[in-house]
Image: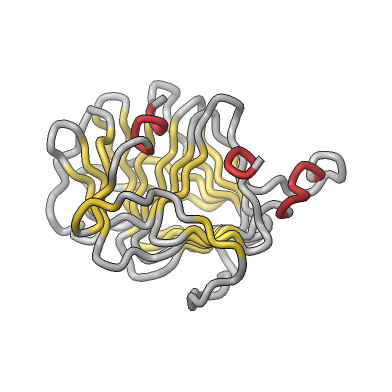
Amino acid sequence: MLLHQLLGREYDCHCWVRQIIGVTMGIGAIAFQQMPTSAQITPDDTLPNNSQVTRIGNIRLIGGGTQAGSNLFHSFSEFSVPTGNEAYFFNGTDIQNIFSRITGGSVSNIDGLIEANGNANLFLINPNGIIFGNNARLNIGGSFLASTASSLKFADGKEFNATAPQNAPLLSIGVPLGLQFGESPKAIVNESGYGIFYFLADFFNLPPGLKVEPGKTLGLVGGDIILKEGALPYLVG
């Protein structure tokens, strides 16, 4: 319900952007970084209680962060998950929303698994761009929103900003009201899934691509949404 409300609003792209999801079939003329060879999930030091990342084999266990009510805030200087790796948000089961921002200058390359405890909704905000590779997948109980917005605004006027993290955040216990974009918002590329044949993934035991539980929302919100040989089952089907 939370992301349905958020995606039903208008968004600010210097002024308010009315086109929330623009889907482009094909490659798109966008230069992004290549997939990293090892997981790159690095916390920054901008929160009252900073995020903590512990390596256990190919798993990056993400703890810490700053809690405000049932909201949990994480902040990273870089966030990428290469093939065969996992980013596991080890949140308490009382958390309803996990808000994660990337404050460095690099694109997020996601070609592994992102997982979270319980039924928390997960927000991933990187204004520098996001690429979901062919092996990208989700294991979360709640909804998932990935965006290249510069900040997330809340109904009480507070803001979680990825481009001005030096401003001490006033973290909100409320629900998000909208997304604030810069003048030229970057794209989100989705290569996960198997295009129009995404429904065969389960049959052939192939990576299913980005997928959430029935009744939950999968949202990609950016300058352009490029489906490069990928699919979003709950948007396309």
